[in-house]
Image 1: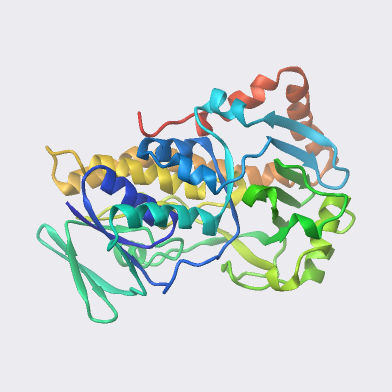
Image 2: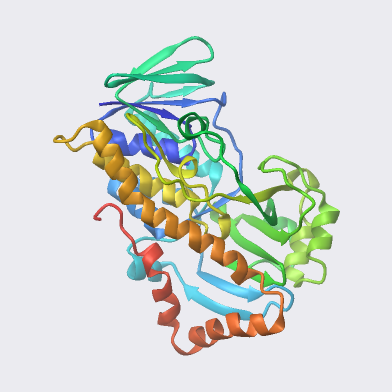
Amino acid sequence: MKVLIVGGGIGGLTAALCCLHFGHEVTIFEQASALGDIGAGIQLPPNAMKVFKALGIDHIITEKAFEPEAIEARMGESGRPIFKIPLARDAVEMWGASYLHIHRADYISALKEVLENLAPEALQLGARVASFREVGAEVTLSLEDGREFRGDILIGADGIHSAIRENLFGADRPNFTGNVAWRAVLPVTHLKSDVPNPTACAWMGPGRHVVTYRLRGGQLVNFVGVVERDDWREESWTDKGDLQDLLRDFENWHPVITQLINSINPDDLFRWALFDRSPLPEWSRGHVTLLGDAAHPMLPFLAQGAAMAVEDSWVLAREISQQDRAVKESLEIYQNMRLSRTSKVQAASKGNMKTFHQRRRLGQILTYGPMWLAGKLVPSIVHRRMNWLYGFDVTVS
């Protein structure tokens, strides 16, 4: 089959690789003129790595990634440990694949490199979609420059503000969560003695939290800070933030955090408002379907947005490869197979917002106390709590 994919991000590129793996022809339409050094860090969990292992490209991803020593949680002001889950070899034993950190640009570069080797003409850059129409068993995609492309299936992998989703189901109505996220990436050499551990660390505090981890062989530190505020409602990753605002948001926090913030280049600081969206009841109509954030945008509190797009890609490519089905039926089966899992991850991500931001002392004791106790006495309990997420293998499901 000929598959048309709108969006050249992680979801779109992975969807293309999965479709090629199952023997289909692909064309990706990306409106940007280049896939450059944009974005920040991404946590690449074992459930996503299993897809790349099945594609035979996990080693290419790993070469560009950083393997943290552990997942841990600490109190934001004191730095007091709450729990710690060892990773590295333990992640493979526990969940069947590595747990990695990677810069978004490196992630996309790795996927693009593989795609260009397999299908050099597949990626169309500077290709802004104007419209699409379905006639019989064929979908026609029209670009703003007047070109038209025909295929058997159209996949909308065009992100949180998906034009394909809006065309299928109308404009969405996101709800502001009351949370604003800050992000920055900086060299470790810009820091002094108080350097974040080479772990995936969540620093929790009243009405706010920080996540720190390493990138590019440990040479960079990725910073994400989320604070409950109601004075900023721009849902854009590219809006610049004010360093003084960030310093006020995390005043009197642990020296690791305050030194990190003071070391950020103001030109490299961004912030965006976090909006919540209810799960879509359907993703597909006719020969057109959605994937990743276009289908199920989720809050970042579980670090699974990109991983869900990777899982989607495998299931979609596998289901459209069934010879005894019509395309429409295969897309409906793909949608139904993924709805329950992505909805569960969406809900868990939203739930973590409350876990990270306990304001009252009693709430902190009741929430973090059992985590600390389990981590000390029965650490396997902490591991098992994540089995449903990290242990899932979509390639054998």
